[in-house]
Image (tube, rainbow, N blue to C red; front, side, top):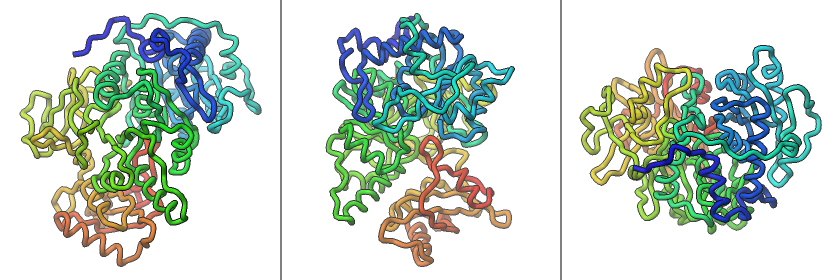
Length: 545
């Protein structure tokens, strides 16, 4: 068990301790051709701490960060933690109703965002009943431009202020002392049903996972440079591409554009990262992009700088991983984590990659596979190879969901978290994901796991991406597959028949998709996962997935 002192501020643990280690002049953040050293980030953090306090942000209150991946994200986050306040994060590309929901739900005292979001939220901020004391605005900067430039065309008055100008006028303030068990960061669920809920996490939670996963399991190093496909507001990337590199004195390379094979290729060429935070969907797109480059007679993707990539957020199908390893010979450490536990608690790792599995438990955590009906962690575990619900125990477990005690009671059982994810574990301790307990489809009286069908479809040479949902037809549930075909193939009736036959001969016959629709791309939610709610809407909104 790792023991942390009672006085544990994440601002000190991740940032100011690097100054004590003599790393002040080292690049902490890169954005295009510019870089910000640890000394500079620390100075801006001290000013941010002072600015928030002067704006009326008190200990324990929320600061809502709604920013793209730009350098001010770093000093806003650390400045919030340094003044004893709590970080909450949102997607700047979210629709207005979601942004308004976040302000009301978090009861934020301050907001830091970009001009377009500020305009959307101004009526909410200026409302008489608003609890927001200040809204600071950062330019919506393209990678390589100035993320601290003066902002034209935005009215700064009342509660709305320009962050860079306000920081220049603020007197630096050292971090306050914070107890390790004070709330530090709220991490949101993906909101697969209803509005997303926030997990309340303490300072200790983030330090614990950093020690056991980032440092001891996958091995972040001081000479690393990170790049991320998921955006920083998503806890997966907050960890892998901001907190973890800062914890070891490494460098994070940021790009603010929407992630695509082209924007990621540019970021890799610019920063020459050693660690890339990725998701399965983008791994597949990079393979297709590399194929397209070859057909145009251009050089393929240069991933030679990368020590390893990380994958999480959704299942990494074995056929996709094998294609990646054969093409690039570049390791991918697939793992499983959740907002409820902050980050990854089971993972593949250096020297121990088993394709198709999510690796083994991270030392410091404990896992159990229990029957779905289990009401507590003390239930008799499932036998090896038997599918059950994953329960996890560790010192990064959430205190609960904000404003949802009922859901908290169903999920958190003391030190244990019932994940709701279906898994099996083999005799060697490798975990295999089998989907969500509430994802299973009953087709013709028999259970079908969409994940299993998706992985089977991906094993066909014509398939680049696949997603399976349930649809209703005359009161019966049927499976429907959305397919993105690989270059050189066409979505024809003949391919429909071939894919159905492929599933019938690979899996039990009843698991084949009754309906197949070819699409140019699969919709994603703001976490980078395939958005099955959107797919259900395309199919008329019926059925389950």
